[in-house]
Image (cartoon, rainbow, N blue to C red):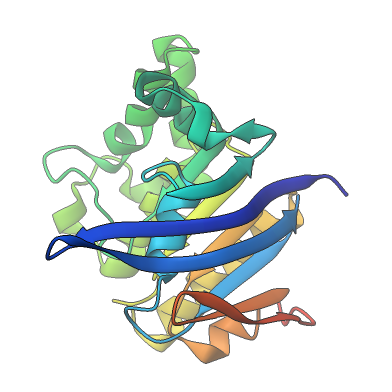
Length: 232
């Protein structure tokens, strides 16, 4: 299988009170295309920082981050934005749907930025994705008019808009009840079965243990990296 994620001796420092505080230490990590990776560990230990490096939102202080064959630390900011639009779909804990746009319009938006499809093609793809996540009947509603679980499903549809090979999720079930969390996780597992690579930060140990691999971050270092038998 081809490597889609490579971290090579990655460190991340942030300035604090006139000094540099190291948040990630010597991260060496690879992931194959089609893996479902759960990242766990206590709060404040570097999990979200790792995701920010993976998505190009932040840059390593030292080392290399290579995603889908591209060394992110070498890209200029404008090229990084274009790269992210093509390669990564991001699912947030608080959904981040634009409140004044319908679910359909929210899903079309990433395709508008990329500009690779005609407007009718963008609308058709958005409708297909919303149908795929079970929201065909709600596509013209605003985010405030649907449940939290439905909003997260819409956010997943939006993340898939440009058909990226990598889906990254930061606590995607953190604001959902157990039953809704399970349904969202099953959707992630279905995407894995379709060949997507998924990386999910979660505090939910049950969901983490249902992934195909669990990486534990403690004090900015990889404490454990365990292969699992997927439950979904």
